Image (cartoon, rainbow, N blue to C red; front, side):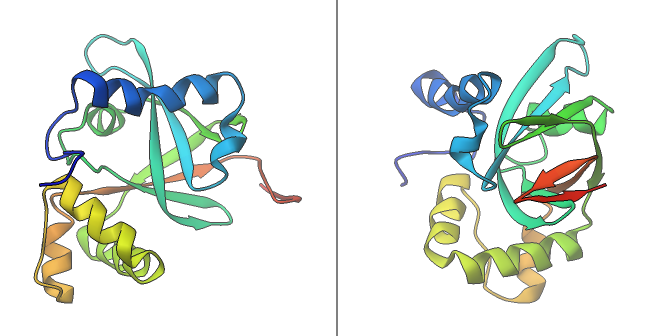
Length: 166
């Protein structure tokens, strides 16, 4: 059993630890995380309250960041986005208006395959923490992506390493 269990909604010290990076982003120190993490600013689907969630980037293209819902399709931030609650995306130390799209399982499986090749040890640890596994086949990976869905964000007017993408 892994030290950190993300197979269900975090509570206690783990919730606090996972929330800590949001304070760094809000203090405009998100640059410390580079492009490996982003912060999603979203509205609660019921309360309308503003929330902040830092998530890992599974794929970064010049104009798109793809993130995984590590706690599954019932994660509050994921459900808030489904309800149209995206306010902004924080990349490094900048806040951007952005669009969101939900990846189909086949596209998500392709992204996950590339992530596994780029970060094999991290992928194994993440699967363990999320409480998921698959048989290693492409078909199994597609089925897995129903349990850990992916979301793509396209910020507007993003400055990336000296270049501007509009």
